[in-house]
Length: 168
Image (cartoon, rainbow, N blue to C red):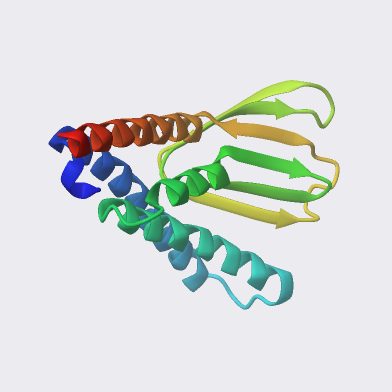
C-alpha cells in the first residue's frame, strides 16, 4: 500500500502516528512517575493500574503500527480513539481516559443538569470504583471525535489513491 500513496498522504499518516505515539508515551511516563511515588496497592487498584498502563501501551503500539503503515493500523487507530471518546461516572464507577489531547463536553446529572467541559493537553486516565456512588456524569471527547473523522477521511483518501495508482 505504501508505494501507492502520495507524499502528502504519507505525511498525514505520520502526523496521526506521532500523535498516538507521543500521547501514549506521555501518559505512560506520567503514570509510572506517579506509581513510583505511590505506596503499596493490591486487588482492584492493581487491576486498574494494569488497565491504565495497558491503554497507554496500546496507544504507543498503535502509533508505531501507523508510522509503519502495518496491516490494520486504521482499525487499531479507530479503536484507540474510541477508548478515548467517552468519559463516564455512573453507579460509583468512573472511566476517564485520553492519550494526547482531551476536550470533553458533557452533562453532570448528579443533582441537576450542569454542562461540564474539560480541556487538557497532557494524557490522563482515571479509573475509580465506589468513590462517588451518587455521581452521574457523561462527557464526550470532542478531540477524539475529530481524530476519528480524520482517520475516516484518511482511509477514504488512501483507498482512492491506491485505486488510481493501481489502474495506471
